[in-house]
Length: 77
Ligand SMILES: [Zn+2]
Image (tube, rainbow, N blue to C red):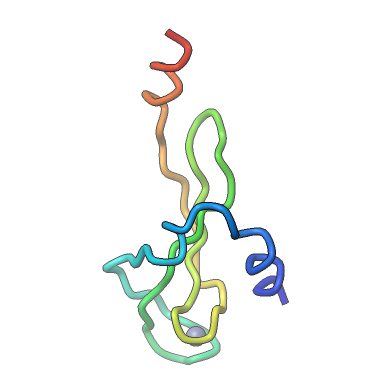
């Protein structure tokens, strides 16, 4: 189960656990639309990768890339 992995490695930024998306996604385990939690997976030069998990059972229900190009543009001057 990949749920265990995320519990071990998601310790540092507390914001991850509290952040809720307004969106509801379909969970194949709960068999209905559920509120989701958003987890930051990776920070890449062209954006951050997030994963959405069911707020009830922790099943992965989706993921997305957030483009944050301007942030890195500022850093590089
Ligand atoms: Zn679920």
